[in-house]
Image 1 (cartoon, rainbow, N blue to C red):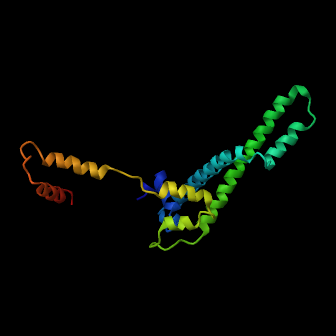
Image 2 (image 1 turned 30 degrees about the vertical axis):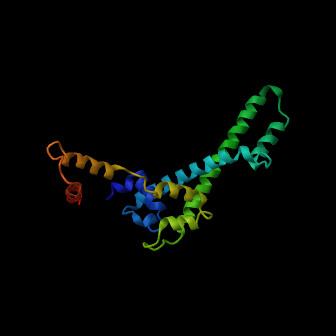
Image 3 (image 1 turned 180 degrees about the vertical axis):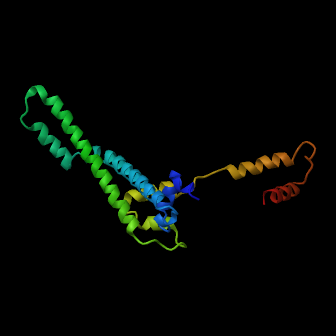
Length: 186
């Protein structure tokens, strides 16, 4: 069981399922590591959304942009302006990263402190109702809680049908082939 607790996708699935959260872990250290991983994923989502929103919000100047503008317009010697601009841009980027991490930590901790929903409730409906409360975790829940489509079972049946209907058995009735495949796969 503990091997599942260290798989990245499994741990994020468990945490993002509001029926289990950290209760689904046998080991508290694995739960804490999963919370750190979820916080990192959430911070990444926040950074991506900030980058996507930055060009479109040119009319509203954010606080870091304002500080960078004030810092670059202050009186500095003309020989070192490139260095100061580089330093100012580095400070602005560092603040953005710290803010994303802090925002992610707050959102994850708020979510984890909420009560666990009953096991019979649908986790996707929970996330649909809470998408405005936890917008970044909602995005991650849609990514990690949805089952990926797979054609493996269908391919296995076709493969087995190829083994059943051979050159020597090509005169089998289609209903007989269906019954043989049904008995073989169930």
